[in-house]
Image (cartoon, rainbow, N blue to C red; front, side):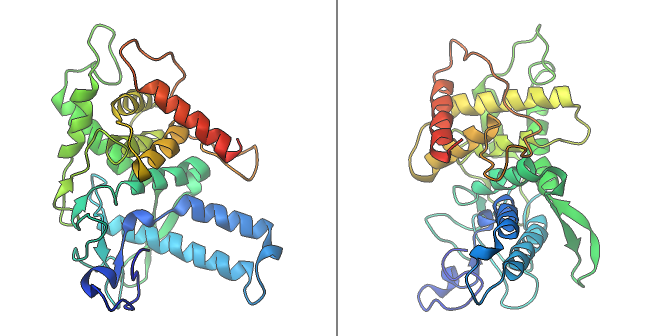
Length: 312
């Protein structure tokens, strides 16, 4: 968590620093990976601590993270850049109050954009184990909820906007007799996914960069109930290629997200523990870039550079 996080230690700008969290810092896949590492290398834990204690902290973060994300995201997947948690009680009983880093609460912009791919990565690495028990306000278990359910919110919402605005066959399942949609017909539709009281200002990120469509494209790598595997693969290719081709090259963490998302879409998200890692259910199919595409070679190059940097 940035700034004051869950505590009240900041004397400056208390409204924006104290009890202010960025929901997109939730990284369940990485935390599960840390748990696996700790189990295998407990002897590296400094004296005064134990692997079991650290694993329990990570597990608590995953469980209560998913419980919070379940409540503070819209049915469309939208999430606020910032969320002020209460000083006491459940973290989802907070409010849209704090703002930091040039972004505001109640809107999905650059600070919120990391949540879709970070949650999708949990599923890519851990598949159906990428979930957590869900509890009600009385602490009673009421089911499970996790990466698949959150990723499906985004994929279903974007699909719905595409289907409603476009002729059948121009989107998956594609019809060779129908002209496929262009990126300018698909990417801007993200700006219109339904809002809710947890993110009333909606999708304010530009859909043309890694803060916009490119991050959300990873949610199509997760199976979607009611959509067959062949059609879902088409959707993955369709959204991934349009997002990659329409993604302007930036700097700082939008460029960093381009590298990470490129790796994920290519099925090359680095798994450091073994060669028998879980793989994404759906990855971008290998194909030659179209004659009109200028962006895909760059994205492929970024993925290759990330592979070298990651030691793959």
